[in-house]
Image (cartoon, rainbow, N blue to C red; front, top):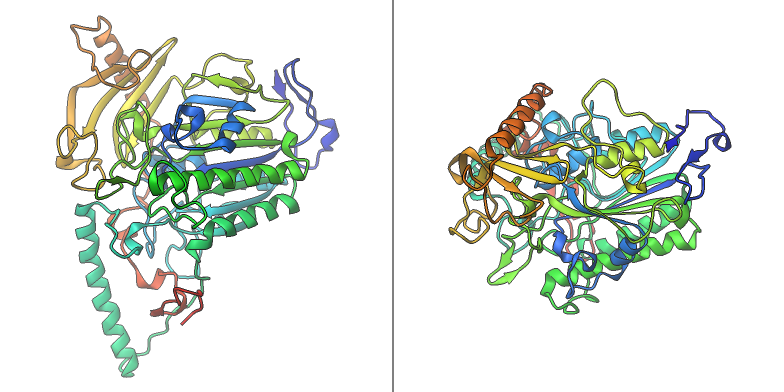
Length: 538
């Protein structure tokens, strides 16, 4: 099987994608529809074994397509996972290895090439609807160096950052306590300086020119309907298209419309999942209505595992990661990185198929580039792999022999796919608090380094093919190949590290701290606010 790539300016009918004999040949560039959930656990969907949360539309995708059981996020937090997803590269290669906050200067570097930029060059209309969380500005409020429109998207409608509990009354912060104290100190220092400048300006002691940019206030309670409207409209207007629907669901604070509140058996979290499923269904209906279902590759995934520490008293507000240990912010444990992965392309990909091979969210990069007729950049390391041969069944094994699981800058674990055995070695693991609870409830999120992690010499070793829950670490006494496996993985780590080059840390303490001159402003800075009821600027 091979696919003849489209060259720019070629006549499309002359480029025939030769597919397996059981499928029809394709003589067009497919539309690409990407549906990415936020903080969704692999155990939250019916097609992955949940029998109490209703997800009929996502389950329909699974029945009509290919379900991946070992689909792995490149990081356990939103920003680095999405950076890797967009660029096909581990986030450590771009310096996107932490959290992204409003008013910071870090973000996805302009020299990174996203799959959207490649598809744009291949004649696709590209759109992003929903969450971005890769930064906005670098040095001034109007440079937009990190903005989606500077990273290959023709159209963007959504939230530049992320939904956060920190913006909600009486909700606990999502920033871990140590970082919160550090950022609060920096913020006080900056705020004092800004106040001094403001007083000096008002008293005409000095002349200060504020740089102004206006953002539309976001009506969070209506975000689901507004995003859905824009997604459907985009599908109706464009082709060939690449549409990335980046849901705000199911990130806390779980903004859910009244229609869905109290309807699930799992409280507000279940309500939020079921609302997202309806949105997926409406987008799929739009494809059906426009006659595009059979000419569209549809992909559904989550950016990382469910948020175990998200609680309101004894009420769980985060996702369920099934049998897998750990969750969001835990790079080594499967619960933080093993996510749903579903592909559908009727007539091209087989229906009702399960693939139990290691795949990565980074693989979407090479896959859509291939389908769009582009080529991946040759001047950098691309970690993602083209999944089409695996999805179509023309090969039986994944191209990923090793996968590297980073938490921030720190390599926590490595998996080795050795034929029919899947080994995983943990070099560092978070220390759960309280002990034995399976999460970091005292700090709100598990740390990547410092006193909150344990170092393992030799590494903890698991055979995921026999112990997917990572319940029983192996030892020299229980596994005859222990030393051989550890030595092979250590060698792969050394080889991997030789491919890394130093880059600026986009999410350093300085880059993520609040800078008032970069603060998105509803009005004239520093007087920024809007009416909560009708969204009008005050």
